[in-house]
Amino acid sequence: MKTTTKITRRAALASSVVGGLAVGLASPTDSLAKDKQPKNANEKLGIGSIGLRYQGSVIAHKSAMYGKIVAVCDVDKNIRDQAKASFGSTPRAFEDYRDLLARKDVDLVTIGAPDHWHTKMVIDACRAGKDVYCEKPLTLTIDEGKTLRRVVEETGRVVQVGSWQRSDHRFRQAVEMVRQGRIGKLQKVEVVLGKNKVGGPFEKRKVPANLNWDLWQGQTPDVPYIQERSHYTFRWWYEYSGGQMTDWGAHHMDIAQWAINSLPVEIHGKAKFPDVADGYNVAIDFNVTYQYANGVTMTVSDTGRNGIMFSGDEGRIFVNRGSLQGKPVEDLKNRPLERKNWQAYDFDNLERPERAGKLDSIVNHMGNFFDCVQSRRKPISDIESQHRSVSTCHLGNISMHAGRPLKWDPIKEQFIGDSEADGWLSRPQRAGYETV
Image (cartoon, rainbow, N blue to C red; front, side, top):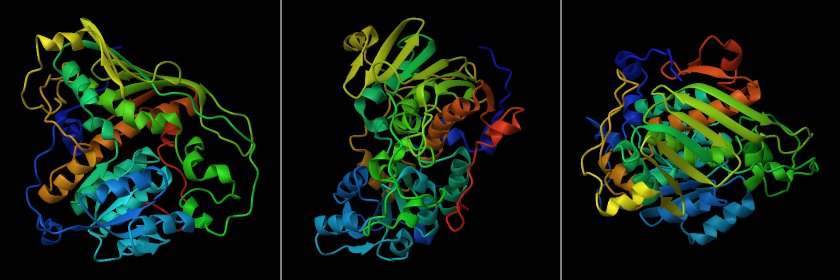
C-alpha cells in the first residue's frame, strides 16, 4: 500500500531514530563525565537486582557471573528472602527499590518487575547514576518510551533490554538474510504470537502479609487484591501489560521490524475482548495488519505456528526459537552471507532501504550488556530500538481497542488526524508513582 507520509532526514534526526534502526552496535559515546567512567576491568561491579520472581531471578543470577550481587529488592517478602538466601549472606534486602538505588555500592541494576514498573524504575535508576538491564517489554505506553529515551540520553547511562532474541544466531541470521536480499525484495512478514489466557471472574482476597500490594500496583489504579493480578499472570491484565502483543510481541515483532528496516504508518487491529468482571481482559482472537513506510506488510496473529515468516519475491524463510528454515537457508552452504558492516537506515529514501551486511556475533545477551558498561557503547537491545519495537506492539493494542484502522506518523510519534486515538498514547498514573 502506497503511503503519503513524508519523513525527512531532519525530522528523523530530531527524534533520535537513526541510532535505533541502525542494526549494528552504535559507536561509543563521544565523551564521558567522570561519574560515567567504567570501573577498572578487574574490579567487580556491584549489582542491585529488583524484582526477583521468574525471569527476574534468571537475569539476576546471570548478572552475578559478571559482578557481585550487593542488594536485592522485591515487594514480596517471601521472594525477597529467597533471593537473599540464594546469593549468600552478603546482599542487603529491600522492599522499596528506591532504597536500593540510594546505595553507593550499587553500580548497576537488573529489573525483573512487572511490565507497568519498567519505565519508572529505569528512569529512577538512570537518574541515580546506575546502568540498567531491564526485562522486556520496555514500556507500558508509547509516551513512556518518549520520556525514557530523553532520560537515557540526558544521563548517558547504558541500558540493555532483555529482548535476547537479538543475540540468538537463528534470529540474527534471518535478519541478515533478509537485509542482504536472499529472499529478493521483502514483501510480507507474518508473525504468530499465540493465544492470550482467558479466565475469571476471580475471587477478591485479603492481601497476604508478605506482599506490599500498594507498592506492587504502582502507577496503576488501586483495586482490591486478586491473586491472579500479580506474579506471572499479571500479563493478562491490560492495566499492567498488553497480553501476547507485548509479551511475545516484544520478541518476535522486534526481530521482524529489525529486518523490515522501516517503521509502520498504518495499523488495522481486530479482536474480541472478554466480557467478564474481575477477570483477564486482554484481547482474544486477535490479528493486526501493519503497513510500513517502505511498502512491506506485516501481519500479527494469535493463531498458527509461533514464529516469524519472511516472504520476498524470490523466496521465504521461517524462524523461531527452535529452527531457521527455507531454501534460502539451505543455499547458504554454497553462498555464505557477505561480511561487512551494517548501514544505518536511510530516512530520505524510505521506499528503497539500504541493504546491509553481516552482524558481529554476540554469544551472550547479558555479556553484551556488561561489555557495554565498560566500553560505554550502545548494547544490541538499546533504548531506541526497543522503544520503537514495543511501540509497534502498543499500536496494535490501541487499534484493537479503537476498533478501526489508524494512520501513524512515526517521526512525530502521534496518530494522524485522530485525537481520540492519541488519548491511548498514555494512561492516567496514580499519585506518587508518576513517570516524570
